[in-house]
Length: 189
Image (tube, rainbow, N blue to C red; front, side, top):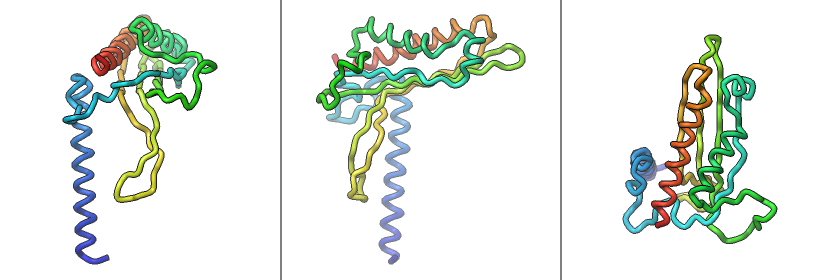
């Protein structure tokens, strides 16, 4: 490889790296301000979404979860309740969902990890995200690839004594779900 091509490749990598770092900085800021990461002339990420498919909550630590008063079903139902009350376009019955329907769709995913230590203290990590997939080509490689698109995410860590842990987890869920609702409604005024 000639010196000129090596320089061009390093320059391209530097430009892509700077763009990724810049977008990460915007993303972390946009979690507190829904419009901060919107480029000039671009719509907010959640604009025009017409269907949200709620996947069942993934749960690691079911035994500790029972001891800490946390269950995947209860967490899933709490998100659903808040989203329904806010009037979000939920798809909960996949029998009525027609694949191939041309609606802007998100998949809402919840992941829980709960652990109880020897001192009867509980730790729960809750991660929620709204994603979809797309096929696109990313230059300089012309072949299309399947990529995940992240529209929204939030993570909360809760560390408490066992007797109050369940209530603190649900306080965190309420904040997460209401933040998503607020971002969704702001984008779809």
